[in-house]
Amino acid sequence: MIRTITEGIMAFVYRQVLSYMSSDPITNVPKVLDWLEKHDRGNAVTRQSKAIRKVFEDENSNWHQLLVSLWTDIDAGVRQRLFETIVINGSLVSIGRKDRSRKKYGCNIPWAILVDPTSACNLNCVGCWASEYGNQLNLSLDELENIIQQGKKLGCYIYIYSGGEPLVRKKDIITLCERHPECAFLAFTNGTLIDESFVNDMLRVKNFIPAISVEGFKQETDFRRGEGTYDAVIRAMRILKEKKLLFGVSCCYTSKNIDAVSSEAYFDAILDWGAKFAWFFTYMPVGQNAMPELMVNAEQRMQMYEKLRGYRKTKPLFTIDFWNDGESVKGCVAGGRGYLHISAGGEIEPCAFVHYSDSNIREKTLLEALRSPLFMQYHANQPFNENMLRPCPVLDNPDMLRDMVERTSSHSTQVRAPEDARDYCGRCIQRAEEWAPVAAKLWERSHPKAG
Image 1 (cartoon, rainbow, N blue to C red):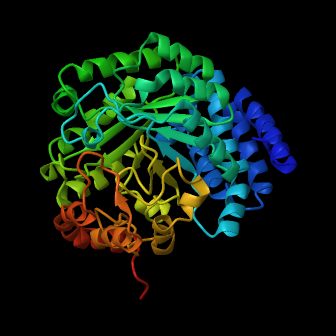
Image 2 (image 1 turned 90 degrees about the vertical axis):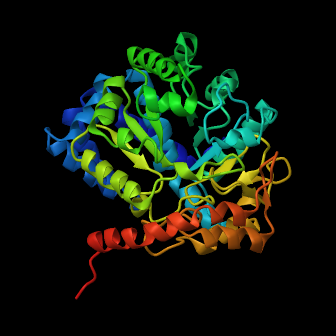
């Protein structure tokens, strides 16, 4: 992808600044923050810069410990490459291009693109929707390459892989990392296919980050993912830690494992494993094999909300809750506002948890899909609720997804058993009604009305 002259100059300058910062972070980071704020014409990084400055001023804070650990625990070449791809390319340099595209085309332009290279998986997890697709769907290497080329033209440098199990295609993923060193690649993976050889490839390309699924401890993880999975995952994380590679944990919290994954022991274990971030998802009842009884109730959802915010004050771990952090990102980030999802069958979907589409990457470009009726419904209706603790058009506002799908005549992308949006949304109505008054109290607590 050929950058504009301005983008090229910006990237060069930021790389020089990054090199200066890396030589002595404790001394030089505050100086770099001064420089960034002084030259932040679009107000793209000033808020984040002030937050980082506050962290560096308090050497005893957990956030200070986390930042310092990126220098002590992560390979220098990997750290440099990921800062360049995520911070410089993915955020600072490309923000102008994304903004211009949004204004020119009048649609959402994503920060990241989530892609399923394959529907195949080496596990058979309880309640997983992957079985709805079987093992027969794949995007070719050329198709995956084309998605990245299209995304970069729009200003997207972050590519995330899911599945199925994306590391079934790990050779192709490494090839894409090699071909696009200016991009960052992340995969949500069960971790069982991570071995010494693949970790060495990661260390070589330096721009791949795994988020490994761990559903608690041994009992909880093996309950959903099969006996022996937990031990395999622990082995994988041990290798990653020894090689000083950046990785995180991905955790689906359910009614069965909520106590384990919200416990301090679990967060301490994540840190001991060597992970630097943890991404939390609540269980969604997708497909004919869905198990609605695994959905958390309002009390359990609030439990995760409260616990996670408590740990953020004490644990040197970056955490994201895909639903409960709607307040931080101003609602739903799907439909291209923050990201979109492309299935292994090429279907372009608003969200990994919304299996409906009116576009296929084999028939339309990314830009055409972003301007399609379904994605424009997302663009027109976001945020789906003025209470950002009820961000989701399925789990929190189930009538919204149903209406958008029906209004655009979008089809179910489930292969074996296409699912009517009314059925999917219907499973969420009770939980949405339970959560609404709880979310209202939480929202009022953090956003008291004047007078």
